[in-house]
Length: 174
Image (cartoon, rainbow, N blue to C red; front, side, top):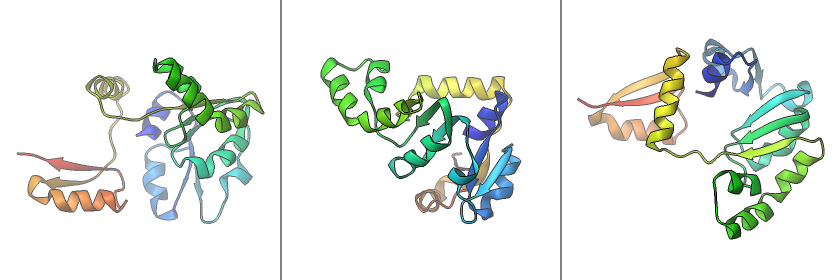
């Protein structure tokens, strides 16, 4: 969902993935696709404005390496940091705890005057409503892989758990 959302804001989108997903991802509007089996994105990209991290700790150093001076890295899988605690209004002891826990990422970012932001992704009514508004305003359509009936819920869950979905897996209820 990040690809069509980013494109709707006029951003240039570069992503990597397996060759099997290349056409589907290009159809979503990606400007450049990198096959991770044949190319290392950290060797071919540099001076990137923003990185959306979906892999976490094992990739963060490489992701920071492609960011430009002053660039921003937004992580969905890394460690929360002090900035996250302040932004979400946590109490002082949690702010201190997360400042210490996320120090590694803040230090990586500080080397090139970059910024590290952690986003805790969770479902809530207000957030889902805002996403729906953005998608409606920007005429963004979800990439749907397969629709299952309620009787097929176990098959749908198995597909998602196995990482086999190429887009959204939908459960249709009568």
